[in-house]
Length: 165
Image 1 (cartoon, rainbow, N blue to C red):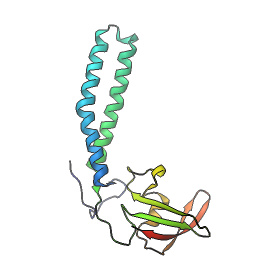
Image 2 (cartoon, rainbow, N blue to C red; image 1 turned 60 degrees about the vertical axis):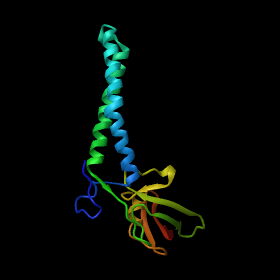
Image 3 (cartoon, one colour; image 1 turned 60 degrees about the horizontal axis):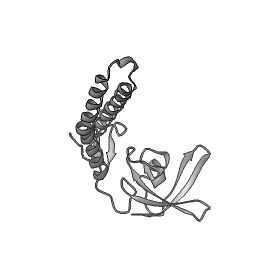
Image 4 (cartoon, one colour; image 1 turned 45 degrees about the horizontal axis):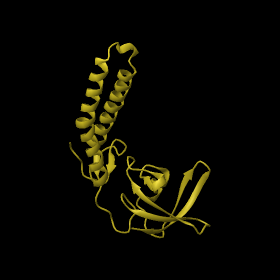
């Protein structure tokens, strides 16, 4: 398990920018899957095998499907963790990873608050946007008061940064 520092120079799309909290969460999930869940699936398969004819055994088929899905998730987590870049430092006053950015669309009064995160943590329901999303890319590196334009399916949008924390 190796993690690179934020200043590492390589292809940003092959790296998974994560907070330490998300990295720890993914590592814990991987540990649980590779120990507890694998063992439970093996026990389920053994029990299902003991029931007889495997070709018509629904319990066996279900356990095999669960095993395949679990192994795929383990491979995905290992890939994410191997290419993880832990982002911990924020530059004061500049939008970047971990920054909470309040923006306002030109001509409107309503403000929107987003946290900039890596693509693995992006979750629009919780107002977490990926640094690779059109909005995330447009906000990165900006300061309070800066205006920016980004493209959406309905055309270009202009926003102003109200605050960064």
